[in-house]
Length: 214
Image (cartoon, rainbow, N blue to C red; front, side, top):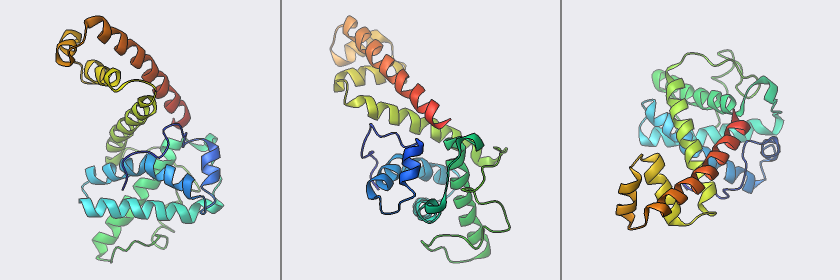
């Protein structure tokens, strides 16, 4: 699995992309969607207690499941956010894995379907209200981490590697500015300037991502 997004300027939560995903032949759209969210789904599965291979199977089955459902899917933002929508889909796939594990059924990389009807509404047809669930806290932490990493990838091409490193150390790692200057061998004013410039761009990207997904 590739950890890097194919395009950092691509906005995967717009309705235009979800419309593109209805075409299973749109390989670029699906690849960009996968690159953006596979690590989020994988990390949630891992932190819910699944082993590495099991979490990878959940990721694969999640996207196989989506590829089968998307051709007839119409996303309505009024019924719930993209964040809630993807959360419900991910949770349903982890739940399907655990149900099969409990019953001793063979877990294969095939789209799931038969075990879903009757238990709960299809997550692609209805977005239920968020409920207190063991996965909720895990999902929120991983979502925030994914959002921050996406914002950082988007600004990477707009600033120098040194400026980005200064921002990471001074803001994300919360190091004193004087220590950052000594560590990188640059002047304190340069550290101030880089932190301010990159910080402003980072804040803009994060706010845009939140508007589009939440």
